[in-house]
Length: 191
Length: 260
Image (cartoon, rainbow over all chains, first blue to last red; front, top):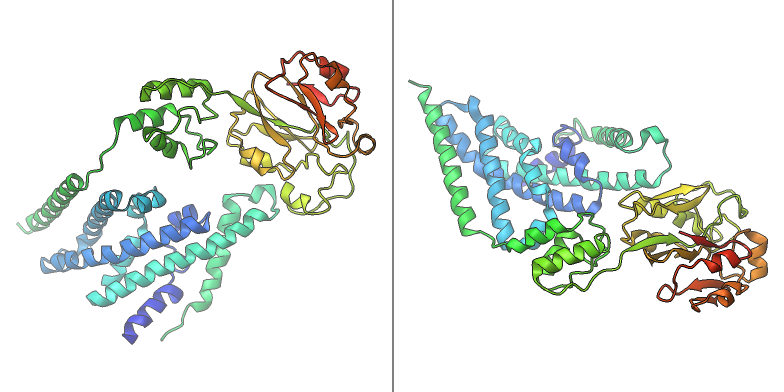
């Protein structure tokens, strides 16, 4: 149990998927405009990451058995894309309110490299099935934390009087870099 | 022969995914009304929310369930007619509206109490002594209305909001945004309007703004239809009675009435 908690905390703070490993930047910049949408996206990413890990782990065992693990990236993308589609169809029928709230973010997750990143990282770290699930959950949580923190920063940017040339994307990118820098304070921490 | 194994595995993976998706999409198929798409296509897709629903898609869903067909303000009569046709109900017609800023006291016509150096927004400026202009009910000129306009129809010229009537769709988003409640929606047919909403006494208005309505009532007396009234020290035109003859504009001693 203690080990799983360490994995989650490490994933959230030390190896933050967005701010330290720079994965999923596109979704990070695209969705962090508002606090509400960033929480929705974060929840969806946590869910997809955990489920995708549960799906890809058996697939990796299969690939490992036939010694074709070099094809894991292709296989994982296939499984994740299929899985997100599946969730979308089921959600449209059973939870229309949540489906509408997530809107375009759900298909966006398919192309979110953080999801593929976490499944590959699980294999590289040599985690067991339960440890992989914990890591996936922690990484999803890290993504949510980054989104929520950054949506607050962006709200402040919107309210401030910044030079015309920096308005929009430039100010956002600079702010993202500074937020990322603050997470460097966690790097090198080991439990 | 070893290269056949990955091919076989990937073919199997693809086949399993395909079958799974097909089966699930059949089982969880959501029935959609074909009218829904037609209604959605007929709407202007501005997503302004003036119909009272959260967007065009939402309103389309409501129309299918029996909501009135004439709520879309940007679409006006054309969209109302099209929706009624799709739904097979009688067209009740919709009046096309556009936004009107009831102030023309720009920085040359009114004076300033202080220089505002804070956040570039009307709401912020209004918090300090009701704005930087001497007239407390006038246009603040920081463009909160221009920022919410989905059509970019509002521009700020000489610190006053000016509506481009060719671009304005009458959604009313700016009406909610103005901290002084200066913007009103007016029917497109009405061509004359009072460009002042100052509630100050005529003497005070005269001192602080060269084009403010002083509530003299000449317009009310000269109107052949009795459409103009003076309330709260400024003139008001009743759009249901106004015939846009323009007599009040000619008679107004300060030039507060404008032709649109």
